[in-house]
Amino acid sequence: MNDEEASAGQGQRRDRIRERVIGEGFVRARDLAGEFGVSIMTIHRDLDTLQAQGWLRKVRGGATSLPSSVFHGNVSERMAAKSEIKQALAKAALDLVVPGQTIMVDESTTCLHLAQHLPERTPLTLITNFQPLITMHAGTPGITLIALGGEYFPAYEAFLGLYTAEGVAKVRADTLFMSTTAISRGRCYHQSQETVQVKRAMLQSASRRVLLVDHTKFRREGLYALTALTDFDLVIGDDRIPMAEQRAIRDAGAELKIVRTTST
Image (cartoon, rainbow, N blue to C red; front, side):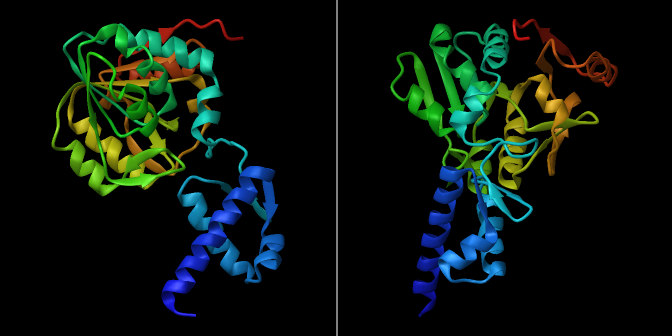
């Protein structure tokens, strides 16, 4: 078998592993090794790659597609999670959008809720790397869409990495709306280096930076540091963020707006 054939076989195996994990919720590495006739170490390398791409989460003995504190599932799962709170945050953020502005929106599902309301504030120029948002507003009257390209990451349904970050550096936005995976000790974190690369470029390319976060982000962990909360001009959060966290944010010098929710 030549290198090209080996690479194709590897890709097909990883596609099948991904489908198995998503379909069954959990698979054992030992079972996968037997099914594909490869070593356990080969399966672990496959799982490492699929985890880095955001498709699954490695756990003891195998892999799972179930969300956790550091793995958040696919876009549809993320949209459904805490949707009532995300909608409340989105409505608060919409008050900051002024017709005629250029706004930048990242690949977060919290900001996707905001994007659903953007036709209420046209005319606007919208810059984004998030495929669902691009699809949503391609052809929307009154919205000039600038889609950021680069390497496409199917698990995140977004364009991420170096080429996307370089594209961000070529534009300028009045306001950036962004979310993050986790917040710890006054800093934002994310699980993907490619995502952090793009988000940092976005922070540099916007005159005003707004962070939208729900209370669950304060219970999560992230691998890669993104930026400090004080680098945002405004943090919008829900009223279930612990009071100690609210005080810490304000004591650090960040402006915090708390949104009331009806969630219990």
